[in-house]
Length: 321
Image 1 (tube, rainbow, N blue to C red):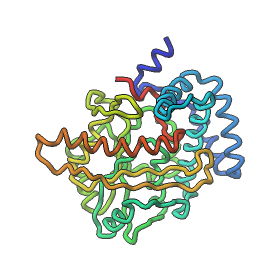
Image 2 (cartoon, one colour):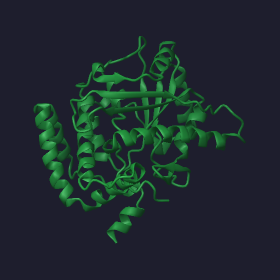
Image 3 (tube, rainbow, N blue to C red):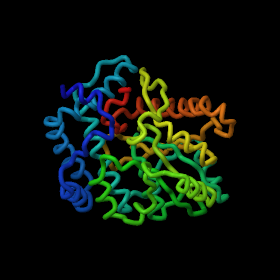
Image 4 (cartoon, one colour):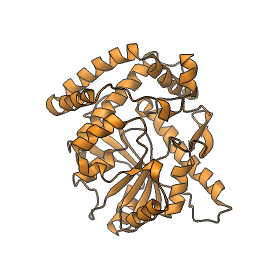
């Protein structure tokens, strides 16, 4: 019965793991007071015991890792779910480091992609719409700009659209750590006409609006786009991709990933790819354009998941309809 529940539950129905807020404060104390190699050792030990006892989490992880294994035509790694859990725990430590200003711009390794095009655009005072994911550290750009770490000549602000379902305790800790950064967050479940107009104004002022494109909405689950991902049909949020058309701004895909999956001292690969699909079209053409935009996004996401399999943090059955 539990396996059936794991296979059918929506991500917003998965309860936040971690107990009381003091557990997260203890995590923050470890990050602030211990050398990073000891942080990694403590995290690995805690995750090992968590992996032994957390059967539902192991099952959710295994669903994703088995899809990867089938695409790569290999047998799944028995310790794969442990590595996945450990990588996720390290990413939480990574977020705390970023939000307390410990990650600097020289930790970022740029790629031969469209970053310079985005930088030039921001230097001209023109904003953009970014589609990110739960692969790697999607907080990286926001935490860097929050401490005046820019790759541009002109300052800009980042306004993420976030669904807070299931992460209330960790978000409370981030708010304690840096209240100003959390004030820039837009609640994905409360977007109306006024919010859309405000976001459009922010982009016109030379800022960035960011949203993840790899989780369907907690409140509008029927608003979805279907495409193949890692060998099987999966649902993606229509709202994230439609918002790009509503805001009528240049669209970029962005991913920040640790080069070494299990090393929080690792440099980060920052991938910035401008979307080839334009949503400036008639209403009749819009559904097909959204599918093209989605396929662009998923092809990049799939490639990066295959390269960094343990850094995609969707612990639920992504392929459940």
